[in-house]
Amino acid sequence: MQFELRLDIFALFILLGLSQGVFLIYFYLLKKKRQELHNLFFAFLLITFFIILSEIFLNYTGLIVKVIRIENYSEAFVFLPMPLLYLILKARTSGRYSWADHVHFFPFIFYFLYCFLYFIQPDEFKYNSYVYCYQPDWSYIDAALRFNDDPLTLRKSLSSLYVSQFLVYLYLMFFLIWDYRKNNPEKSTQNASILRYWSWHLIHSIFITVLVIYVKLTYERDLGDFIIGTYIALILYVSGFVTLARNFNPKHTPEVIKESPKPKYEKSSLSEEKKNEILAKLVQLFEGEKYFTNNIISLTDTAKTIGEASHHVSQVINEKLGKSFFDILSEYRTEEAKRKIAENSNLTIEEIAEQVGYNSKAAFNKAFKSYTGKTPSEYRRNLNFSDGGQL
Image 1 (cartoon, rainbow, N blue to C red):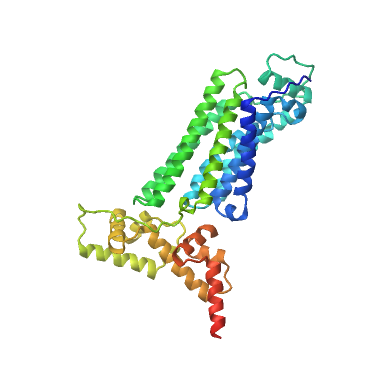
Image 2: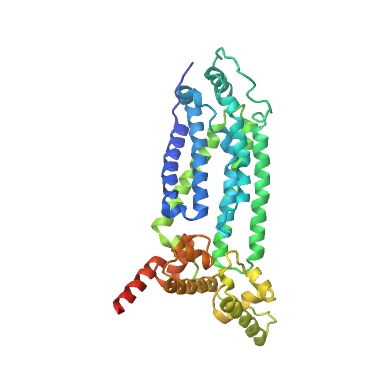
């Protein structure tokens, strides 16, 4: 088998991107980070990019010839980025993952199993496949197919299948954004942060798909894959920079928003009497029925429950309490958590978080510390120490 090593600026850039990917994967798989569902999915996305980028590097440099047996190992992974992006965005709002969400991984699993028809072909056949895609000037060697490696012609239609999947998930992500804005109409820093996060991922999803289409239409076979690899490496560089910036500057990662500018409702038709009526309903709902323990609560659902318009409820919260909906939600949950910590020493922090309405321990810890200055565990230890001192 012929072998020629190619090392140039693109190969170096991609190799450094792979190194950055290793750092990011390690960081997001740390126990503290993976407790948050969207971080865990982001780690899976990074692993996917790393696998795809590593084969692009091997193909571009020619090193794949040295490990020709694993040639084409990353092909099925092209069906993972869009589902993972969708699940990341979904986790940013609901923080939930149901059994029904497993369906997003079916295309990848099916195609990966389908690729075994190619994986078990002779090495000579895989070498010829590599030569056809990346080294058109090289000569083929004698090789024989054991059986048809693509009976359903799925591999020949890979680009079309990827673009089709992209369009489906683009629709799903736009629907997520529309639904989120509908259920959370009030303007808050937290809402703006989530929407910016969505926009970032949507822009990159669209750009990389357009890039794939351009490369496949411009370059013969797979000769332009190094351009896609360079862009993936760039994503890893930017992700690494953003990760470092956020973790060395805590101001960049406000999860629980304490500041909530008081909007002006100059044209509002609400009378003071009506405002007090809505406020009384809210207090009854939160203090009497503990509605805040609902883990999928939203401003829209709360307004419907008390039979008022969501913008009126938002106005009352802002004017009467000087806070946002998310602020009072966090406050009620924190106070309820403090009560449970004091009264139920056998409950774990995870159980308390779930009972007061949080979907993850990490989100609960941040909200609790924002209002008490301590994590739930620290608050419990101080409480126990205080009780022990009194005895």
